[in-house]
Length: 221
Image (cartoon, rainbow, N blue to C red):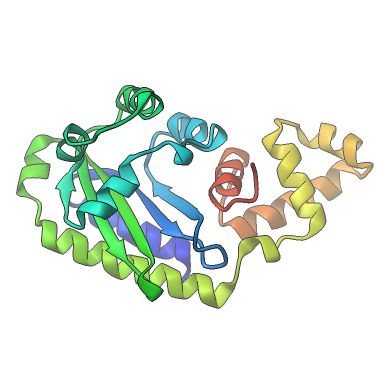
């Protein structure tokens, strides 16, 4: 099973319990002091802004959830946070992004690497009746499974060819296939071929998703 398959199964599990989206923060295998973020169902506009502006540097939610080491609602977590001006501005933007309340679930992986699942609920009723122990057990299993997959597969950056990295960077810059072909001095057909290979390696099906994946995996800055 691939990492994306694990995330898709996890999304189905959460949706069946009233949760429409989740994000998963996990330490990078090759750089344990840095984090990757995976998501399903989060607002695309918000995620793109989060990644482009490197909000992970000021987002206080993951660290606070991990420190608590228990499953709490996002509302409860946010009420107890002590934040600086930058973090306060981030949280105000977070609240305006369309997120509903949900759960903050800390996880632990190999070599005691600490992770965090954030899941968003559609209604307060679903949030009140959910089995928090089960939610944490599933998130914990997913954390360990994804870590094993990433160790087996290696870093995506090592898989992409130099040309595919160039294509990804111009994609993030908003360049079309014809524009990229002119910049790189290759044909549009060649650009399209590299783009298909790039999509396949990143496990995506469109240009926006490829850019989002590039930021999540640390391939774009």
